[in-house]
Amino acid sequence: MTVYVAHNRTNAVERINSRMKGTVDLDYETAWEDAFELGRLGQQYGVVVQFRTIEHVAVRSPEALVRGLRAPKLTFRQRHLYCMFDLTALPEVCLCELEARAIEHGDYILAGHLLKDSTLTWE
Picture 1: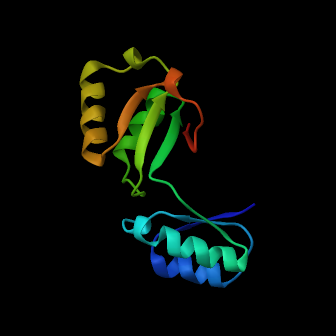
Picture 2: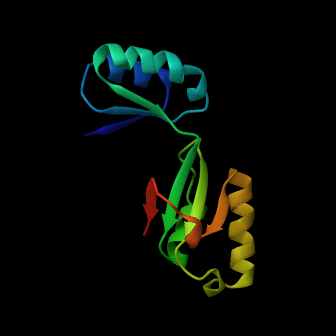
């Protein structure tokens, strides 16, 4: 099943009205305000509409964590970054910088053993 990520209400409505089967994933600042209404519209046309506030990210390596946090954040979701590696592999200065970036973005760096199900993987 295809997933279309809508970055604004207009794109979401256009995708739903196209009646293309699949899922419309609402990922924009005011999506929470539109989720119920667009979900009902989607039901009428056989399109699944989802809104998630948190992205559970499995981070496979220290390099992936560095790349991911230094890159521009393209989602309005809070990211829980589950490190599937030993965090002591990062120098303390680097880890402090990455923690500051995560806090700035409203994200959390967490131990990998806490991960139950991921919605995204950083390799």
